Image: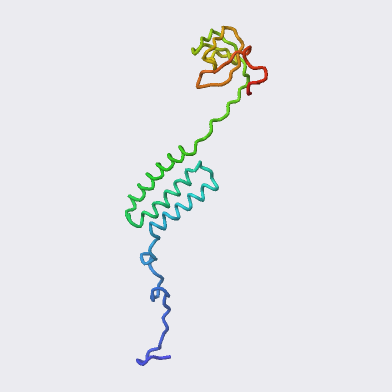
Length: 179
């Protein structure tokens, strides 16, 4: 095949997207994803991570924060402000979630629930009790009752380092203290 000028006609191989002989340059690649898309992917990824790696709802809350920032990113185009908003929302929402999701106090299991008074316990006043070989501060649960020294007592509770006690002789016969 020859052209009108008498030279052989050659067929050029062109790259489909650009119409050039070479592939597109890296600077001519498609525009990277938008910040909104990035926040949506981050939020979904963090929420999914919570399903596989339990983090006490931290990852889920941060994921929800990222989804909120994705909505706000439409009107707030600044990436540093979006990151600041995400961090702030995450901290506030984690603290709020921790307050709403109260964990029940672990049940205390007493090895031995009997002790003996070392000092007299006056009504409504503290005294000392021997429990598991250690001296503990103690108060009588019945604030109108006094307990003499060397009296066997049941330990019925604890508040910090103070034991709450009741004398064994005043314990109702039909009740057994909880172990």
